Length: 180
Image (cartoon, rainbow, N blue to C red):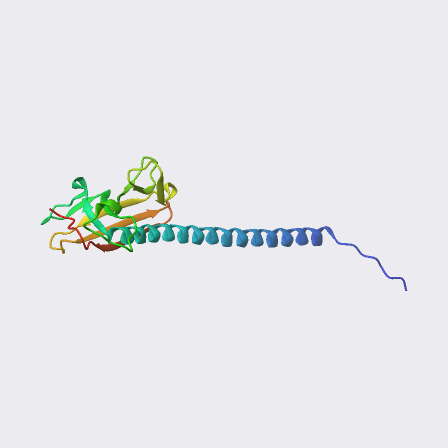
């Protein structure tokens, strides 16, 4: 008896192509889903790290403030908000000498013309970018009515159109009052 050699019928071939195409679409969709969420998580972590770094930078420098710029003073007795803050503080915040301004520097936190949250030291044109412009940072320095006179709330909001991160931290000033 002779064996019949049989090939694929047209119907079997169409089904195989359809199943292969469907499997490929499922794999590509899964890859894109994972890739998108992976990138979003990386971006969220990057925003969070930049905002946390900015707040830590402020906390470390503000604790040794020895003079607040007159234009940065907040009014006592009322809730007041500012978008920038400038003060004189120790260059080495581990060695605080409030009566010796020779070792001080002027610190200025603000949103620059390119929309970065920056720190300028001694009004130098070279600035440290704390939160990049791609995250559209916003900052508020706030003294709330009834709060302690040497206590300032700082809120930084940053993010993309899909996600926003907002952190608030209280900063205490030991050597100078922030209100008048």
